[in-house]
Length: 152
Image (cartoon, rainbow, N blue to C red; front, side, top):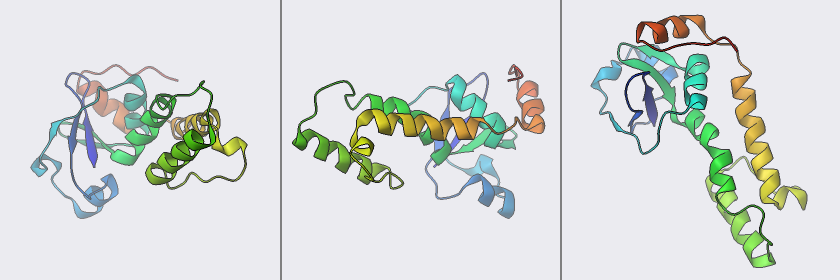
């Protein structure tokens, strides 16, 4: 999946197996993809990631879906119910959800099985992506599209 990020329009997505690297390498016209309004809003985090890891196209910046998922993951995991008492059954269900949806997650210790640990790990992953420098060519493109860029 790809997302199309634009400063003045809703976030859009295209169901495709293509990545931004594929589009760049194959010179695919991103305008030919079937874009639809996304079920999520463009957050400041998505914008920040687009300015670091995106691909400039005429109608915005394309961002790979897995990067957007990294940005959303901490909130999704928090929504699974952190802060509650977990029985062995509940923890098992939580483990199964993590294993099914996040292949990189694995249970190496009792601490790794806690929702708090999974959330912390997800936040660390997002922060690693955000640690990359802003691509100033993407930033210039964003400003042409009427978006503000603030140095971080």
